[in-house]
Length: 242
Ligand code: F6R
Image (tube, rainbow, N blue to C red):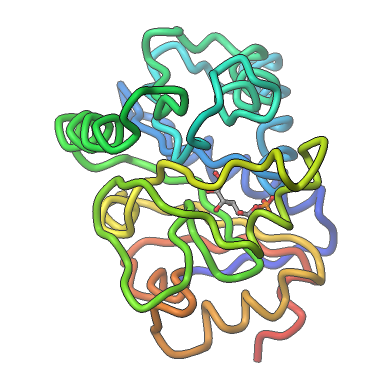
């Protein structure tokens, strides 16, 4: 694990963007795992800026998102597909056919999860996986529990996660009950992980994930086993590390 500490959230975004550009530079067809949520918004802004300054092109990139809410169409404003268009894809030269996101609005989410897993297996290990962590320790939507899944699957969201995520929905009731998410095995297969966290509210879980025991109660703790992970933290998120 390589840690990078920054004075501010915006320095963290810029530092992570620089690392991303370095990690993907020289790869003919970079295969990238993407996250949504508040954390990567600043990183994506920096990447759009870098694209405008001709420091990076996404023309040959293949992208694979981590997760999607079950039941939402891709043009639903709270879907992760919509989020990605808003925050990254509309601002860069990525080809539409190279974008992969599980479809939330399908007859059988389990069939969709199996299809997505096959797509990832056929693609081979991702070059870079962008990742953050939920307040309860989830990565992707792999929620804490007795068991963790290795492959892409349908997961029931915990009430905690639904409450946290309800900020971007008109009401708590409208937050979907489940999601399709990559499993831990698939996430851990990525050649490199670019992990980001910012803010005091993440300080406890960052301490548990990176300094605590490996436990399914904190799915993010498994990241300690990854051979090539960069952890980019602002000083608030890092404030409880030893
Ligand atoms: C997003 C994802 C989640 C988020 C996590 C943190 O695709 O898979 O694991 O990374 O919930 O969310 P934020 O960044 O909103 O704190």
